[in-house]
Image (cartoon, rainbow over all chains, first blue to last red; front, top):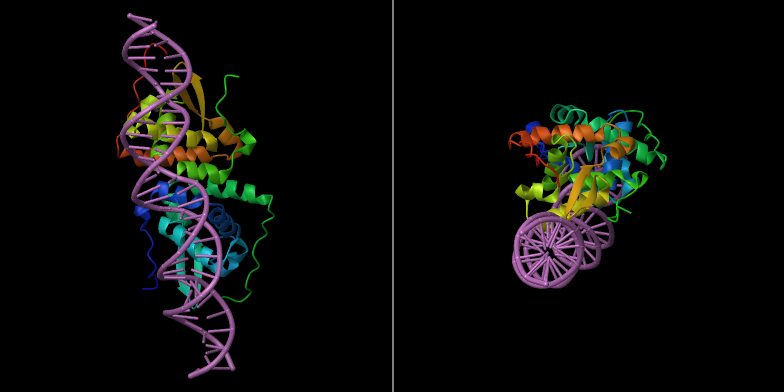
Length: 121
Length: 121
DNA sequence: CGCTTAGTTCAAGGATCATTGAACATTAGA
DNA sequence: TCTAATGTTCAATGATCCTTGAACTAAGCG
């Protein structure tokens, strides 16, 4: 199994859990960054601007447990992706409106896309 | 001033606060009921199915402080309304997607519209 | 093996949350 | 004025949240 970190099945994602997971500035910023990065997978390390390693580990777990992101081990790293399709299936239009609002807010904070690692993971 | 209960101005409504306010089953249910009631004002008492008077008072305050609902005194009652236009101005499409998902979820719970008080308060 | 990179786990701490019951305030009606 | 209806406030309680630093695990490189 490439997938030993527990993720809820699509049908087990609940709306209050997703809302709660997104109702935190750090996590909302992570989602905005992930979305603005054109859906490319990102590592926890690429979010260090938002908090300490420990704090990020905590927030990543929250987002994963709520079903908002998928976390896949890759060497010593973790690759994070938005569960866009699953969320769209379950809560149509919701993620897009969240991302739009989250990016509008963080626009004042001048959120530039994270530089690509030219090769690959 | 008809409006002594503190409400945030439209431009002061923040996205994380709104998400946090909605990330609770009771409050989400209240929003779904308010929306399903065709935007008519409702009183706290009409939500007693969802919790005690004290608990409702608490949740109503949370929703008001986050800018999700407006609360207007009317006799001994409080009239609650969704701040639909303000939210739409600030987070376009968001409320509609939330209401849609919230009603889909509570559909299993068989949420019928609250009977109208045929006369008026 | 030894070292580095990347992230996790744990315990502790302070903050906020949601619920409860008792007491209170306000408005309206008899 | 007395009483009922509708909510609010307060203090207490147990749960959950977010952050921190220290210790740890796991993978890859030389």
